[in-house]
Image 1: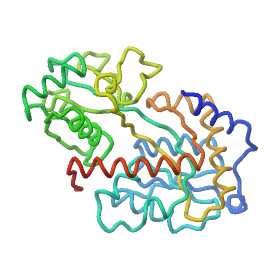
Image 2 (image 1 turned 120 degrees about the horizontal axis):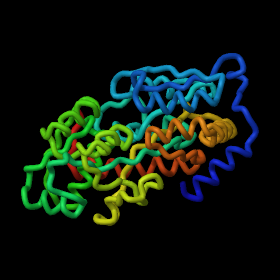
Image 3 (image 1 turned 90 degrees about the horizontal axis):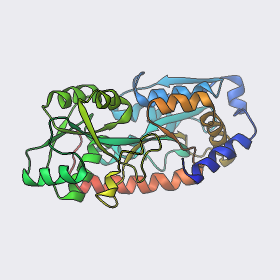
Image 4 (image 1 turned 30 degrees about the vertical axis):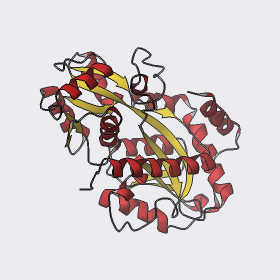
Length: 314
């Protein structure tokens, strides 16, 4: 964890607790998750909510996350309703027409909760032991290699397209509905390459069925210093999945700051750190101001990538 993030967590520890508004005193704070129970966004919300009692997680799936997010965009800005979403919040608007809200203007940024790096993995039969060898292999056989992703437009898909653009290689994208089916075909050799989370691939890597080539972050992971970054071979390459929290528009700044500080305290607890470590996540707890700047940067960056790669929504 870098110094900025340690400082953010320390600020949260020093802040008064717990988070509570007049509205929340009458009923629990609601965390709206725009996806079904059991997924990573749901897990992030539930780990966070567990340290912010009274707080409830409500799942509102549908329309690529637009139903749940739209409910928060229309909610009263009284500190009782928050959205927990992934990086898809700033990706989906570039893939879907007629969005019912503006993903930047119609929400109050609270904090980036955690960041989850992706890892570049290949089937063990692929004759590439590092990123440079994979690039050479792909260039020698244009269009022969295929890479799997858990969905169209998700961070793993965009990681693959960014890799192709920056390395001037051609690999065929094969989208799946979830990382489970994608991993099964990667293990079976139907596809050869995948950008995946460390948590879902770790067991297969340890068993020797998959080979990890690199991580997609700018720095090596503290828990896996032996694993190089893609950027060591492809300078400037970086992409991660991240999870954040938003409130309805026009939330008073004082309430936004209080919730961010409350989340920072949760992320500093051993219980939350252990849960997030298990999913390969790094706590962030950025301030509302820093998260707002980050969202604009990510929105613009993903928009450029989607246009450059000519990615179309489902």
